[in-house]
Length: 346
Ligand code: SF4
Image (cartoon, rainbow, N blue to C red; front, side, top):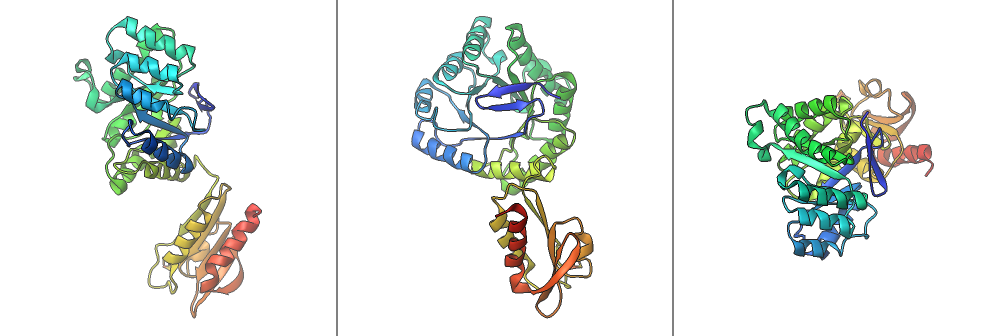
């Protein structure tokens, strides 16, 4: 199990709940737009939000955001140690910063002192795109892990251990292998994700492949799905990956058959309506929506509730694998909602 690191009111690592994170893509100088995006992220279930801060003016603009959110805010700093120090001092809850990028040991010490004084953890994040020349000859996953460990050791030399590590590539296998290496070698919490995943569908699939492989191996303490576009989609995708990997079990899971010619009702509309109506449920309930009685009840026998279409506008409603009554197909959604609400006490 990894060590734990406290970020404001949230602890990651050490077997704590896996935190979902995202990053704003508004202009950091535009405090109002960034505030609005952070609000949307928080409402979507984002646990930690990161903001790129590239200048003193942007740091100044961020003062208008600090203290206004329950979720911790992270400043993403590239090369300027003064911005890293300022981020710790103005109230950011964490910084993403690679100490090997700023050269002087004195400057690293300034950042570490500011981080320690303000209880601000540091994420060391290495991407294949920014690997140092010294690691070029190594296999890609090994190069990523070694580069990250180089930065981590610089912090350790300063006696700083409140560190989270990420090693990302846009290649799924490289990413997974790099995290596996780190998982074997260190106990720091790992921020997992596949970088530059791409647009919504491709990016979600790529992220699910990489993050899913790691989560199933028990690797990862915080998750970021990287998608081009609206970061709220990243949070939604990350939540679904956690659910599908069995990490987050407290939700209403709806399974449905792919349909074939035996299905005689509008299954897709029923599933869409149920998903909409149950999206806010934070209790474990499993519901099966099946096209027909031929295979439906059998295939969905581990569901709490389910429905299987029959002929003549009828469907069989079942609970715990047993048929409890026959209903009209236009009653599928209200009948299932009634059962679901009964189970969760609504
Ligand atoms: S449950 Fe019935 S309708 Fe759905 S795919 Fe299977 S056989 Fe076809």
